[in-house]
Image (cartoon, rainbow, N blue to C red; front, side, top):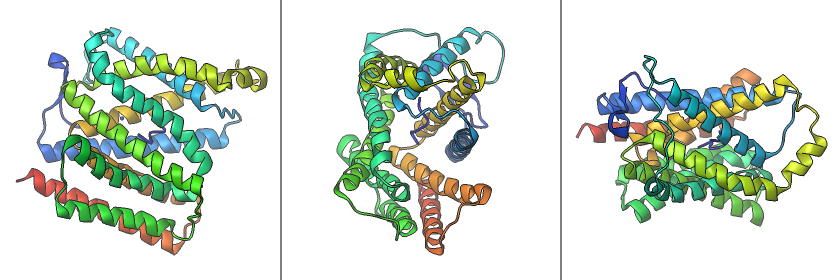
Length: 336
């Protein structure tokens, strides 16, 4: 899957694919900490790798539909190859052999539709919303996760959890203060994109539950159906005509290596995200995602020397404090 999501991991426990599901043999707090740490680490590494690739690469390829299609194909090929080498002894979880069951496909189909909507809206969001507004808009996934969790999963959050979420959103608002420029189009995408991303998290959780936490089945079916949907989208987008007329580096090894690395980092982020979501809720995933983007921004400042105002730094500290408070409350709940 595409690593735009902005939306995957092996903790230090044992994984078993017996019965088609993935089971974690750890205590709840250990599992949460391990999967959270893995999700944050893999996501940040993937972002840094992609930033380095596209900053210093001579191969500019601004064709999102074809890029996503290519990443999905690489993901499918990787899973097929991995399923064939599974007889070899190793400590990693085995990907089940590729199969097709219409019942499973029907359960995964709503998730695939939402995923395609995320793919379509992501470039539109980046096009119409300034980069300085991205962090604040991304934090709105927390608010939409609370709303959709109540409407679709009938999960009502405790008051203290809601207060932690408010702190996180307030922190991102402070960090973006002075950089927000209002426009009707920008406001529309600033609301619609996080709503779709939050909805994607809800459907991920619902689908995982329906498949008894068999994340490999979810990834396989979602990938196959997404490829089928992306084929007409690529053709209708007109990207192929532009690609064949403007791209001159088809035979360059560096270009295909860049595309492959981008696909594999996206795949790694998606799997770590799914493992984390297996043990948590869509709201917790949204908080973790906002926390990740904050840590990511701080690392970029240190590594790449980007400038940051005192107000922005203060907002990020508030965001991290709210995320820590949220994690503490969730940890306390798990001990009850």
